[in-house]
Length: 528
Ligand SMILES: Nc1ncnc2c1ncn2[C@@H]1O[C@H](COP(=O)(O)OP(=O)(O)OP(=O)(O)O)[C@@H](O)[C@H]1O
Ligand SMILES: O=P(O)(O)OC[C@H]1O[C@](O)(CO)[C@@H](O)[C@@H]1O
Ligand SMILES: [Mg+2]
Image (tube, rainbow, N blue to C red; front, side, top):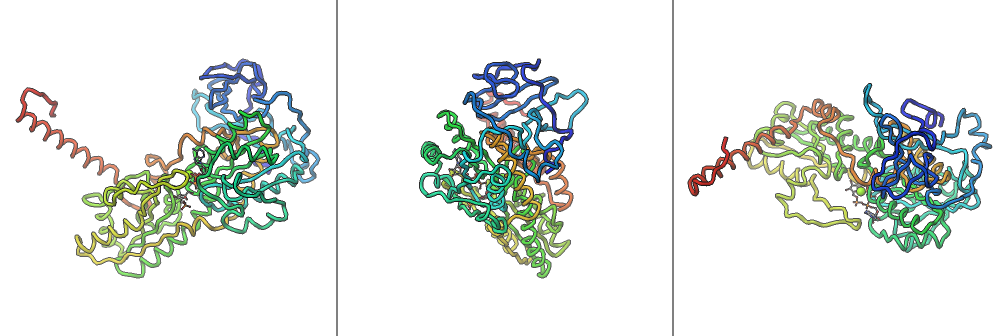
């Protein structure tokens, strides 16, 4: 606990309200004071999405909403943690109101201080009395190791730290708000759920009906909503927050980002990711053992990663048995010089076996060339992908049986749901606890419309729009991908493909030129 909330170089204090910070208007419609809670003074500017505080030397705080932004004169209460014997030993347990966390911690002498987020943690004063709180928890989207741990720690955190007794579970995702009965959650009922995979509440895709959900929240007297889910879920949470604010309700909406794909931006890493990478090792090991045992054998492992190949990349880096890792961010091609088939042939000749790890979203453009595109979506509107693992396995088999004289063996392993359905490992459990507790502290302090997550190791409150507007992806020009390329020795595909494409473009242009010269010599092209 100490390290979570203790000060560090990445945490910087805001200038006090009404200080000389410059006030910049970006589509602004409401101004708040430097503390972010009082309407009317300069220093903080809120546009339709962002609540921005600007300070000296390029300091920017991307703040999160607070009840007092839209409900005036709310009473506050001393934080009951001040009397909690477990926490009384902690020096400076309460977070300074103005502590913020820097998004970028590498700077230069003259570089601006840049974007900051509000530091998560317990505040001296809270906006709820324990007996008035009715909290609820919902899980949406796909499964992820650690969901149950987050549920457990929200229930226990509310109960043990703030004395909150009334916590309900929403069953089956967003649609559960209006189509199912809620279930009571107590420290006793959630006591050992962290040892189980999945979510005890159930989950779903689709079914986000803003009005019905907010009606249900209001009718049930719920005033803290904890929403655990991925990018789609947090978009839905943001819509719920806006509707709650429009209706002027004193209801917190707090998001806990969940994605096994690790595709949420801004935060360091999403929970369950480490567990998933660890579990993926088991499949890769199996592929390695199989491939080593047969002549010219290729082990192919497909892992999750719709748009981001983090699981594939980290599992590959961790394993050291992988010869080729294919991810959505790095286009590849099969035939010709520098292509995958050429590399496989070379590797088999050198080593007699090889392991390929492929993320489910890799090579989708190649698949749609050879299989007519289904263009189907799931209930949330996510594109349903074709099975790249089966496709690539078939392509490799076809190539070696028809075009190459080399006889090969191929073992295809698809551990997709096995990786996702496990309980979280030890380090993810601790991480889930910190996420849950940070969310509880933020809610009790009256912050709303935020997601919680570590930024450079410090837990922070981040506005929804920062994580719903972009996607975290592997940057193939970064060092991590270079490390992978140097560990697998696979081709980078990119450069050769570019060369081929450039060549093709040149040829087309040449053809174009000569055709036109023949047909109509009056039209002049630049043919270099
Ligand atoms: N733009 C949106 N507005 C409102 N609700 C949304 C939006 N996008 C998704 N949702 C809702 O959020 C829930 C979860 O979305 P989705 O199925 O895309 O999973 P996710 O949260 O992105 O998690 P995963 O990482 O498993 O994909 C669904 O109930 C869906 O209806
Ligand atoms: O089969 P489901 O449950 O829709 O989930 C599959 C999707 O979930 C994810 O793991 C994201 O949670 C994606 O990688 C994957 O495409
Ligand atoms: Mg998603």
